[in-house]
Image (cartoon, rainbow, N blue to C red; front, side, top):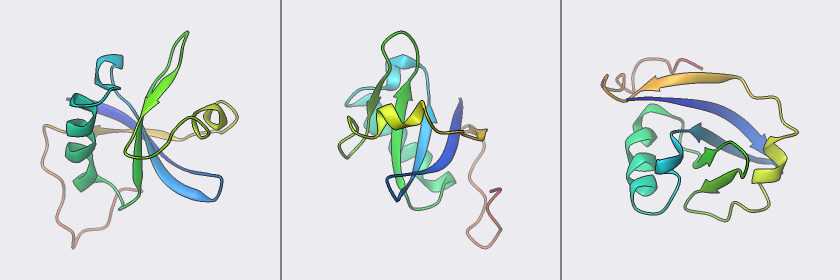
Length: 95
């Protein structure tokens, strides 16, 4: 499974924004996805975002103030393939 992600800073908080299929942007499966993504990323908060007519987000923190800021933020997105094991901690991260 590939998930598109971006690293950003919103309101002086560094975080990872992930754009999975909308069905993952909710408690339960979203929390599982966040746990699966964590080894591939820096130790920042991860926010799952469903784009579309009614954007919404899920995270282990409050998202309602951060979500509207994404529309104003230029993001450089890249894919993470969860079917490929994360690289060792000794290797440099790809970002």
